Amino acid sequence: MKDFFRALEIQRWDDHRYYHHSRINQSLHLVSAVSFVIAYALLFVDPVAAALIGWLVSMTSRQAGHFFFEPKGYDHVNQATHEHKEEIKVGYNLRRKVVLMGLWAAAPVLLWLDPTVFDLMAPGSGFEGYVRQLGMVWLALGAGGLLFRTFHLFWLKDVRTGLVWMTKILTDPFHDIKLYHRAPLHLLRGELIEQKA
Image (cartoon, rainbow, N blue to C red; front, side, top):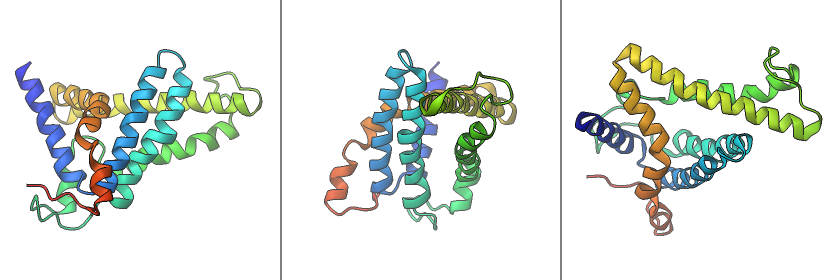
C-alpha cells in the first residue's frame, strides 16, 4: 500500500509540475474542482445533472486551461520539451484529450441524429428529454473514458499504474482545491506563471 501511495504522489507531482504553470489554468482548475465536487454529490441524487455539470462546467473549464493558457514551449523550470512531457504523460495527454473532447462535442449531434443511440436508450420527449438523454450519454462517456484509459494502462504498463491513475483522476478535484485555492489571488497580483522550484 505504501508503494501505491508513493506512485500516486509521483503521478500528482508530475502532472502539477509539467502541466500547471499558468495561474489562469490553476484558477480554472479550481472552478473545475469545485464543480466536480458538486457533481460528485449529485451523482447519488441526479446522475444526469451530475454529468451535465461535470462536462459543461468542470471539463470545459479544466481543458480550456490546458489548451489555451498553459505554455507549450520549452519548459525551462523542468528542462523538458513539450513533446517530451506529452510522451511521458500517464493519463490523457493533449492529443488524447482532443479525441475525448471530440467525442464529447459529437455526442449532441449523434443524439440528434439517432435519439435511441443505436437502440441503447428510449428517445426522450421535448428539449428537456433531449438534455437528460445527453447527460446520460455524457455520463457513459465519462465512465467509459476513465475505464478505457485505466485498462489501457494495465496493458501498456501494469495494473498498479492503471489503478493509481484512476485513483488520481477520481480524487483530483479534492487535491486541486487544496493545491490551487490561492491561484485567483496570485492572478489578482498579476502573476500569470507560477515560478516553480
